[in-house]
Amino acid sequence: MIKDITIGQYFPFNSVIHRLDPRTKLLFTIVFIVTVFLANNFVSLFFCMLLSAAVIGLSKIPVKTVMKGLKPILLIIVITSILQIAYVDSGIVLVDEWKIKITSGGILTAVFMTLRISLLIVMSTMLTYTTSPTSLTNGLDRMFAPLKKLGIDFHTVTMIMTIALRFIPTLIEEVDKIMSAQKSRGASFDQGNLMKRAKALIPLFIPLLFNSIRRAYELANAMTCRCYNGGKGKTTMNALKFSLRDYMSILVMAFLIGGIIVLNIFCGEYNAEFTFNLAV
Image (cartoon, rainbow, N blue to C red; front, side):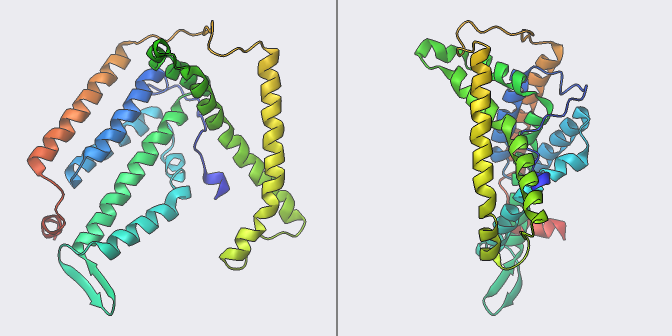
């Protein structure tokens, strides 16, 4: 499970998505998240799924790698689905035994929420999969540069966010090494009940905390030796510049928002009973 956490990793492929300006990818991610929340029926959500599939295909990142990123949140998805099935009682009653009541509305709502959460996670991780930490920092700096006129030093915030994302894979690798070392000494992390497994993880926290602090000091010393003084006078080796593919991507964003609005108007709000009857 630890190795399945892929957030923060960067896969250096030579694809159309990789060559996009980081500001375009940041804006696209924000627009996509908004449109997924605006989608209020299965048709609109299916439209978002087609677009996400197109992005994954153009990025040349294996689908298996993208799906692996969903494993860490599988428990959250399962709990959300169970809650939807248990508390939504609209539609046709399928099971009504003892205190268990399952309706078509509960099942369809659980499917709807599962698809929505999965799309949000997949497209959010695609941003880090296709954008290097340096490019991501530069993109955030340029996007929020107008805030400097208000006296807000957003460069520090972007640097903190980028370093945090950059060190997620490093910390995951560190946890895996510590677990392997503990297992070689007879420790067990997958036996017993939930409380025993939680207590077994305590010996991992101390060395992980120590190594994290050590890495933080090493990074601070390295930045000091390179005369880092924040965003003041900062220059970049590769200047960010919009190209034709970036403008085409912005048109796709406009088409995405317009398409979702049109589908919401013509298809109406999600109706569990109607959707179930249509599927049958």
